[in-house]
Length: 576
Image (tube, rainbow, N blue to C red; front, side, top):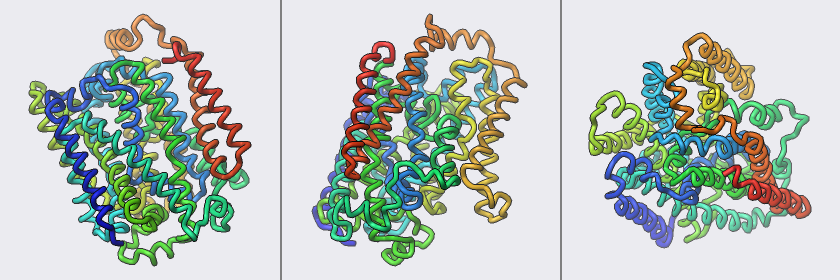
């Protein structure tokens, strides 16, 4: 498709702004590793919260949601909506603890909480395992989305898309550090939200769609709009609703929804100016991520069922795209081809912004692990701040190259989502309990990590090599099996090995809890936890009901949201 001059001007302007931000903050960010990775620990909650939301608004996220809607309907989003429980757990129980720890990365936590060579090994190994291997898998899914968008929008080959999409992102990530990422995230989030909402309104006005009411009553769509799954379909209900809500949210590790906090969410909590700002940042993130942002992607996914009712219609519309990339998640960029000049440029810019936001965060986060938890800890303990920043920048380039290469062998966003869920299965409960149950030690985590990875790789290899050993197992059965075996394994390791030295535990308690009890204000925090969950789900479904034209239920759910907000405000002194 051909873009007009105004479209190119919008895209180029955004690239220039992003580079300007990186250059503007490069001097301060390059002072030392702490400035490069934590922005001097003085960031406000609103900037950190928006950055978290922008980071999870990846280029692949609209594709993923649209693909889920086409496959299992709106209710299929419970696979990731269930992670709200994980997020609220971080808000009310762990955000303050992370900021209080004073560590540079969440992996440095290991040598604060554990003792001995096993703690050092765990820190170093996970720096590579999470910071490089796991991180590259996540970035590869974002690159895969960019490949599909680049082909649909510009006719680019996979290689051309990766080169163009990556170069500016890598440049400002190299220059600006976390502060550059936070500022560009703020700009990118505004562009992304405006673009996705405007695009949705335009698509609803297309003659083929003819408005929201016609959309939700269309024969291709009407059976896809329910917010809850069909409970008579046991397999579907278990896979997308019951298991995510009953098991997945507390038992699996997933970027942005780590039980007990972690990853780039922890990085932003550690960069907050104080504990309250850390807590408010994560609360805003969960509200915006789950309640405010998904509906434009859902509606476009539903609309695509009218224009592209099946994969054959998508393949016919884009004959030059490699057939392996023609999956349901292609529907989102396919629908954007209907947008007019100007709006098309803005929406493409929003997708580029989403790509850059996610990739830059993962590059900076992964690089912080490589530098702080591997290079400076094990390779060169006397490394200067200048050397650390050089190593960090080299690792950024290397990780981007690896992610681009891996993206060429993936086919759709859902494949990587399922793989990541499997790899993190079974370790979530450990991450929740390690702050409070002192019997947990490094071997608990090592065992959990090894067990879940081994089982995930067995399932993945079985599906790819067509060995048919687990052909009759559905996704949720594999997750439950992995959770069960991994949890049993790390519990056995916990009791079969020595606990952390009492001196280390005493220091940890002093730093994290001070004179407070470990369970200080727990009843109030539990109440806040449930009010936060009910409030966000109420807002999410209230918006959905208003869109569907059910104003009575919409206002009822909105009233419940307001009650929860007022309750949290009344308890704010004890909660925040």
